[in-house]
Image (cartoon, rainbow, N blue to C red; front, side, top):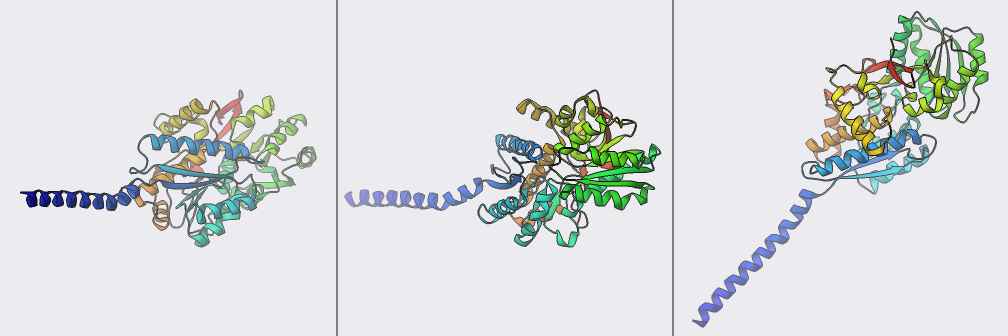
Length: 392
């Protein structure tokens, strides 16, 4: 009887021991199943380009919280690792290296500007890490054979120039003066303005440049006015684009329409320029004008959902720039959902994405096109009554 009880006791202990071993073996599997999916981000949250990076950061964080509240990506919460490059290309380069080598992220969104993006594409290529830039220059994704791992969600400067020139042709404008800032964004835009003008039958009669920290553009505008153009194009971001509006107005040049680049695409710029911005024209992504879109526009619902969520959370208007983060975040999420945290598979998933309805258009990526947009994804807008209106 005693031996029988000892036998039962040994069997019980054996079962307990085996259960413990099974649980120990199962624990790593369980932890792996619930492990966070990392998304790296580098934005210009401070510095001269903070007006870009701040709404990008806020949008990315809002999306992270929304996805995690719904259970994450296939059960994996998003771990969003954000660094501030302070609008500095050198610091941006260091932050991207940190995300790849220290944080081991499988995908990066950002940077915010063309200059910072161009400073890091080589790093992402060398480390074979997919990067989805929020900036505009076509050079970020071209030549394509040197940009296998690089994508971008902002419409290219070539698209913006094409949309602008189409509108000018409709208005009978054949002679223009241009003024561009001497940084990566301005230089790339200037190249496209000069390159595409002959194709649209447009003559550039004045070509002025200025520094990103200049505080007066009167001299440039005066020279442009002397050349007797039918329109003026300013291509910059930050304070100089508001300065261009004020100096244009102060010189009484309203009879010569002022066109801005898509860098002007924030209502904060309208507020800063005040009444002087009335009549300013520019091509913009539809994210800026959601309420003005037709109800059957495929982008309207997601734009309005984003607009309402962002403005409710942050009590400020949306901009093109936050929309860049929306597009890049959801592209990364879609890739992680299908491919998991595998860099090469994420890259392939993004490259083969078709019909992705975003804030900046309906994206169709391919091995030949890592932007996936065209000038048809833009609309011409005009500042009217302190707000955007569709230009006619």
